[in-house]
Image (tube, rainbow, N blue to C red; front, side, top):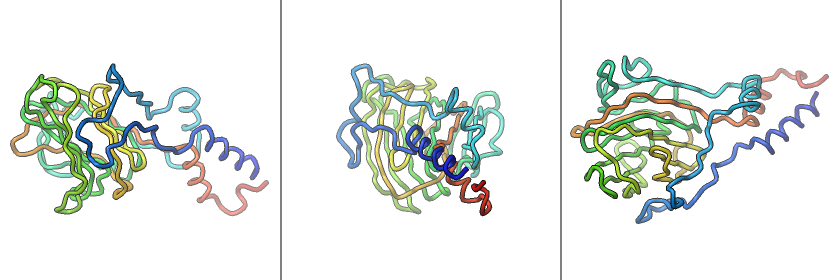
Length: 255
């Protein structure tokens, strides 16, 4: 039994390693332009939620299962900590002061997608947030709707009342006011990537915050509507098996 367990762990490490997402050019120090992408504007984004045999294996594996969440944000905010923003029933959520999605706060690596439309100026989102004063954040500012480079993305870390690693980059795609966009944030290790409608618009690295959840916010003069959001935690098979083995009673792995 012990050898079989070790064999499974080795195989899982080879086939399903807890590795970083293959990176392109990383904006460790803010570049003057957005990350380079192919001529079609596409960068491969592997789905974080497994399918087929991988989904079956994940379902039967010991250890804590990944967090999978979905909400449409058109009724209430019972799962969201904070008192900022408001829900317009049947329409969506208008962010205000930061609200954090409580079930995500202990997560480490994940992929988060939300659908949003900017009505005035911009909006922001947080990730790796442990509370309302410690997190990484990105914001979109819309200055010339519909124009190329008419919008920018700002990203930074917040540590109490201080920001760090702040950078502002022009978006490589035009954005329109009142149009819904799917925004995807991928957090894995020390690498953070952002897609808008499937196109990579930002990527960078930092190591200060190792875990934490997600949230939404907007400035006092900003108006946006978020209509749905999906959260998929990324947990490798190897790490789940090893975590489960730590809690096995002595002799449980022996015949």
